[in-house]
Length: 267
Ligand SMILES: [Zn+2]
Image (cartoon, rainbow, N blue to C red):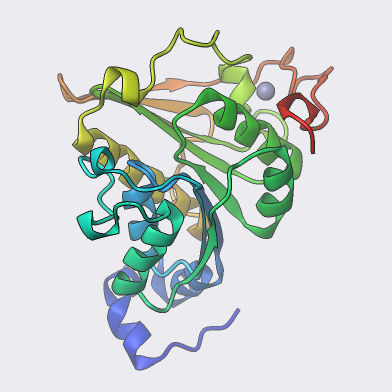
């Protein structure tokens, strides 16, 4: 591992390097890491900013949306002046201002089965900051089949959820389908654009997601692998529930039936 740091790097990351759990070796791990962030919205904004500030060497950002005025209530990596810009490009501009040493791969494309198969193998881990069940299940299946850890967060109204999935590592690690075997019927669970969300809730959950991604890269602490974090901002209570691997799971179970991404559309 390359442990040579410039004076500027030593200065920039001094508060990390002071931590016994990180030090110069941990900072070198962050610099060598490649993280794919899917969605540069409410979760993705704090996520990419904290990953970049931490010195993660390469951040891939997937988003094909254009920035709208109604996004700025929570999507704090963007600016009013960049309304109409692609969100992945706008997030890259924000990162460039914060930490120009970070390489950003802009993928201004829609995440589908072909994109997942192409992009995910190029990164060490994936963070899901999307807001729809189709992409959520695609990423869950793709990360499992391609052997990459997935840090998955969701928000709605005043609530957030977060977990880490490493089902590809085998028992006892659960996969995302051990928790949710199938997507809910369309229209049953509203989206943020239908039901609303407190902007700060996305900020907290995206920041927690960045924390889990950094822990995975550094190999420190106890991640949410095998646990689901639930947060209700109105009563300000966090709780975690245990997630168990389901031996009958269609993705990771003893007689798994999902072996490719064909259920998610043509390649
Ligand atoms: Zn499973």
